[in-house]
Length: 307
Image 1 (cartoon, rainbow, N blue to C red):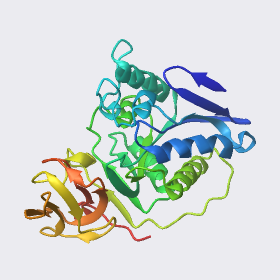
Image 2: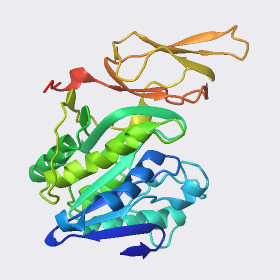
Image 3: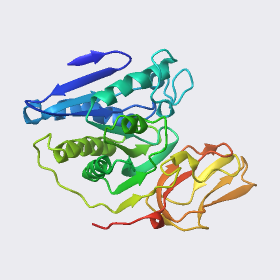
């Protein structure tokens, strides 16, 4: 059943009654792997094997998608605009419409990437919800997504799809993988497989699932945990050359890379004040002062599982 409002969606009705899962891609208009993965799920989810309903929205933020941009034409970041407003700008209206979908669902999966400017290692995440029952469901969903890193973070970051889900008591997870322009087929496949695995773990889809090992399962309840753009900012503007790769281990005082001037006569080292694993890296070489360069999962903050 094709629905057309501010964005296009598709609902798959199962052959048996059950729960309702909402799967979102394209909250940001420059994040392409989620769009392709959610579109692929339309043909991969068999209604005969499904109990309940799955609503798919491949490109939530179509105005930003058409601009090849993270933000819409009103220059608002949709992932900072929830719950939105039906009378507001286009991004606020989209946020309101998605909030209505979230409120009507039993579970939410929101897929992301690093966009045009950065690349992210594959991980699934959730908020440390104050309701223990919802928190446990979110842990279960995030682990079932079958990515090597699982990250539970602050429940107090507002404006997100997950904060809208939090406010309506809907268990929700997100995932990050890829970015840096283009559309990585491996990430697309991994995202589609991860969503199918979660549906299976929720008892909604009758398919075999091979559980992969989780390298790290970290929970960090600090106030700003999970806000990727707050880490490791550029001390100066210039050409950034990373000295580390995704999933590298780093310690306080390690060099993440350097920023050089046009002719290279001036070079500034980028030093981290964190210890952990590199989850995200800037891929676009030119950086402005104070733009983020790397995301580090601080493994000493909580437990590391090698299961």
